[in-house]
Image (cartoon, rainbow, N blue to C red; front, side, top):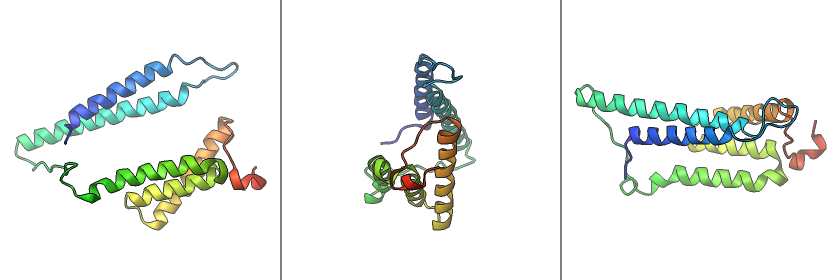
Length: 163
């Protein structure tokens, strides 16, 4: 089964726009310039941008193929790729499940580093790049949520060292 990139892009744009419209209905919190709809709105805008990029790139690829400039390479279909085609989606699902299950007792920092590093490795990053990305992402997210937005994150086993 293969979905045309133009259709997939349109679906992402519509999904992002609908999430954005719903997020705008969330009430603001007293004394704060942003409310619970702030991050869903950012994610929705990202979906819209990604949808546009996917749709435009699919259209450009089809135009190039029609003009004979480029040979269109097809992605493997779900039933044609063999067992390896399921590896990445399954691995990412397991990584996200790991994060959700270990967050309360391991804490955000350790769970996030392991999760981001594992996801980077699944997509082919080298160990050094994966670990650097994981540490930077974990501490960057901590700075954004804990320090700037004042959202408490679970410390887990690092509770004695919380700052």
